[in-house]
Image (cartoon, rainbow over all chains, first blue to last red):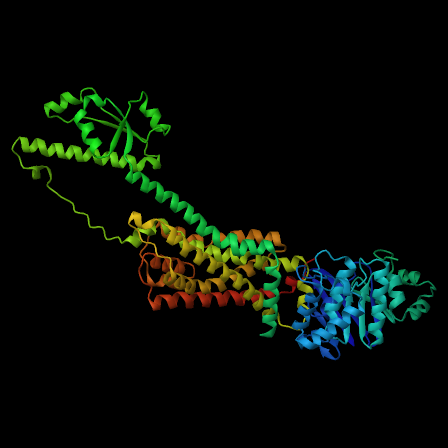
Length: 244
Length: 391
């Protein structure tokens, strides 16, 4: 479970995140939806302790990020906006590196790694160096690397960005699977259909603030729009930066 | 510790797979110095040796006016060539190292017992001709002295009249210390080997990772950043150290191949020299790895980092240059300054003098202390929020 309370972050004069609060529960997929530049990535970066908030609190499974960042990171699996694989290492070696940094036993690494490789359907690329991987292959490797330590909470920044239809489909299935395993899945997207198709709960961010936080159905009733797309436009107040 | 080792092994493995890094860090970097050194000194030495052994060929104008002089010069190894028309141009165009011109009235003034004149035409800006000109001058002077003595004796005077002062030179240089003139830039080559050995790694592990955006997922792992930094520094240091070993070994071999002893010099780059150099350089390996990482941490891209690294490469030239321009007496405090201490110490070793255990430990301890300081600063920079974010 991830709890975010009144998060603020500014870079000089720019208020990137200006009072964001929400809760992402276990066994649910929570979607962070917002136009480009709304503050999604900055919010996520504060969750996985890469950035420190100027104000506010983040709790992961009840642990305060400001108090014990390492314990929090151990409970998180993170797919950052920047996938950043090591191109001279194979997919397996990339996964192993992060597994060792998580402090896992070698035998456990082996079983977990092979499970993930199978689940993500990447047996054919596992022993290839990641240089020259397609976008989809890269995301799969990065996800396997992020989930190797079996984290209870999973943060995915724009996980389907740059993926083709087939890869997007299998990514969605994989996310459902993570939810069904009882994990807390939090992901960001600027694509409405994706959020609508996947989420149990939607948090809409615009201009660094949360403008809506509810289930897809509730959002539809709230705005009086049957079409989710129209509902979003109404919530955000403009069509700028949103992709259908 | 386990984290640091994990990072260390991964970085070493990944970089050993990069052919460009391996080539520059372990072949070009460490071998460039010894190779240049061999080339330059060998050519210089062989040329000097050849000149000293060979008779000097000098065009002589008006040889017929001074047959005795020419005969005496021939005995000393001069080969008079045909007279040429325009000696000034010939010398300037380097067609001849020097030209000797004997005027028509040479014989007349000689017979009168007056001072006879000969002209030596040369170009002192042509360093190449220095040794020929010098040898010719000394031949002429010794002929002049000998004939002067003869004239005094003929008039019943003691030859000592002409020499109220005699200078006996007692050169205190040793064969090793004479060699230093040529080998003065050697310490810089060792520093260069360390720098080049670590350079592409330092860039790749900080600026490169940032550019490829892999620093962000890396820092999302539950490990302290300073542990990651130490692993990276270890990997850089290992490559630097390997480069240093290769360089020292190559110098040891090239020292053996050098015909230095034929010039009355001794150059010993063997084992006892090598291990002392490595010991003195060890703190520099740490220090420079940290400095390179620090510099790379400020760069936004690999390319920018490379620019900073090449500036950093100029820094160690400073002590080498300073010491060669103003040859100050070596004082003990110099061992406390990294780079300067190594320069001074390695030079002493080259001269065949000993570096005391005290000086050695000062050199090493001072280096380690400064290295620690730079590592701390780098660790502090590594904590910065901006470091991980590439966009």
